[in-house]
Image 1 (tube, rainbow, N blue to C red):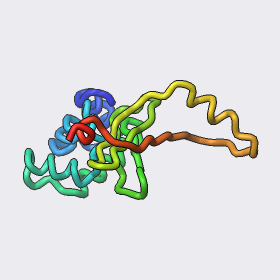
Image 2: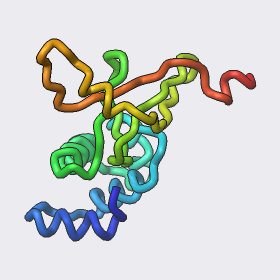
Image 3: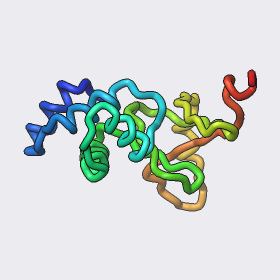
Image 4: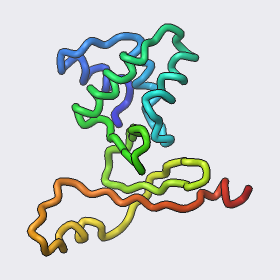
Length: 138
């Protein structure tokens, strides 16, 4: 994900309003590896800026996703999670605490080309389930 300053410039170039609330969200998402839900992001933002609306959070996340600046991850019918890492990667989910981690898997591009049914994939996502190091240690 671009820096908060770059996102501010991108929003302005797209004709989107840049508010202090949106700038806070840009900074909360930048280098965030926790894959937050909109509600979790709203909770964190509310602590720093009381009065921010949940609608502003959802609209900003929607705008960032539409612009390709933010990925959206859906795991096991849970709430949408948001991923500032827009590079090609997959995810691992801890079945105990629910944490989501980015992982890189070699050779996944070939998996999409080995489909014999005539199906043409538009995207691919691999999700590993298991236990994170913190939960195993506990």
